Length: 115
Image (cartoon, rainbow, N blue to C red; front, side, top):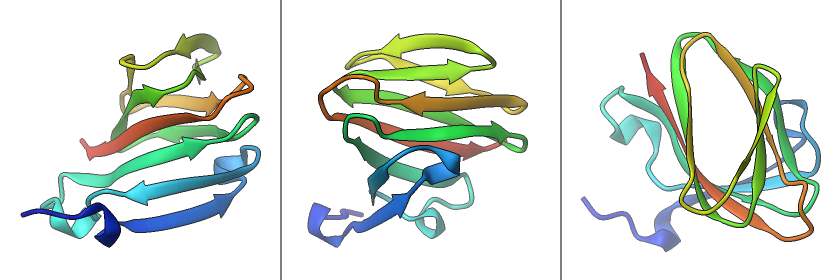
């Protein structure tokens, strides 16, 4: 199956999970096409100051993969700067947030897996 970029759903949301700014995300593959194994497979675009607020993962896990720019991950109170090529994994029972504290745009891939 091929899903062309122009066919992928674009979503724009304000204050995601209590975060700052307006995030744009492109749903690369919709959940109903992933056989119940993933609930999100999206590319997120962050302008300077944008963030996703702290949120838990109770019955799922989330992977972030940095594509461009720099984002600060806050996981269980620990801050880590992520650069292109870096990845993070929030397992079930973990809470995390991510912020663009730089003055440049950033992009990341986010995948939420059912566990």
